[in-house]
Amino acid sequence: MKRVVTVVLALAAVVFFCGPVTAFLYTGLGTSPYGALPVISLPAEPLPIPWFGGEGMTNTFLTTLIVDALLLLLLAFTLRRARRGELIPGKNVIANMVEAIAEALSNFADSVAGQRGKAIYPLVATLFFLILLGNWFKLLPGAESIGLLETPHQTNIPGYAPRLINLGAFSFYTIDGTQEVARTPAENLEELAGHAPEGLCTSCQVTPFIRGIATDLNFTLALALITMALVQAWGVRAQGGRYFQKFVNIPALRRGPIGIIEFGAGFLEIISELSRIISFAFRLLGNIFAGTVLIFVISNLIPFFLPAGFYGLELFVGAIQAAVFALLAMIFINMATVGHGDGEQHTAGAH
Amino acid sequence: MDLAAARALGAGLAIGLGAIGPGIGIGLLTLGALQAMGRNPDVAGNILTNMILGVAFTEAIAIYALVVSLILMFVGI
Image (cartoon, rainbow over all chains, first blue to last red):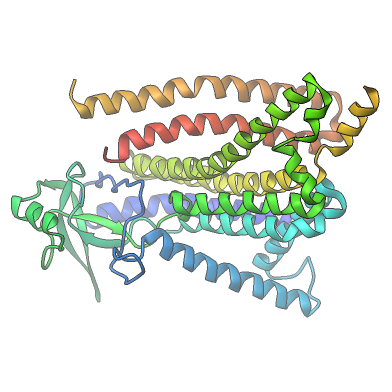
């Protein structure tokens, strides 16, 4: 545990010292210290990569694939190391961290779900690692800032003049935050006609290649649906058909007026189950998207030192949200497997 | 009032009013949890878990308000 704290502190320190770098970069390039506010878009932006559905693969989906591959590599590496018998505390910091987190999750699953803990653990750990890595991946330098230069699709987003920068062998384009350029009527017409303008745009925005995966509702909603479907599956597996008595409690009807209230309460359970999907999806989306917007706005106001602190905050929020998602999934599964069958028998005996 | 002004106003009001309740709620939750931890430090780990769970549920309400204001601000209607 101490090592994990050390690693997290080291990461925070690295992030903090990235702050002055941006300050020198700004002055070094001779542009205004106030860059343009990055484009804030709630839906994921499509990139020109062929994919099903016509519009092209979105940047959040591309990031999800990268994070998946990274996660598989990381876990395969840790597993191989553990199989060779090099256990905690070893020399490799990353593998130690993965093992420590996995062990903490496993202990926690045991303490919450008892004997079922071992069976619930794989799902919960997968959710945790995927969300954690996804949330931290978007904090890497270059994520949400390096991208495609293109004409803004929405008319309410300002476009900026492109500017060529030569750094030794490298040359790349950026946008000049001081020169806001209105879109020409010709560009509007081409946008309406449905094809991108030829050549370099005159009024540009940067569409990032890498964007936080949890800033896309598709990702969080998919995770929420998978989790809640698995909760139902666990309930049926543990209790059989009796699980559905929680929702449509027909046996309770035989118990007179109290039974009717219990029957009605079953419908509230259905609503509660549906609202869990929504709250799962929007909790993760809201926290991570708000963090993204916060970093954009803070970096735009004061582009040095201050954003470093907010990057630290985002590291923390990303980890907390991953933990909360995993924790809630575990608790809901546990609640579904236990049910309230015992309690009903007690009340029946008391009557 | 034009549409942009109404949207900015609505977004600000949505998150501003929506954060009052969860703010009070999270404060009360943490108050209770800290008092319990102070009285019985042995079960602090268990209390912390339950506190985070409660905070997550409370915070979800503020998140709904945040989503409403984000939609008002950044999604074209």
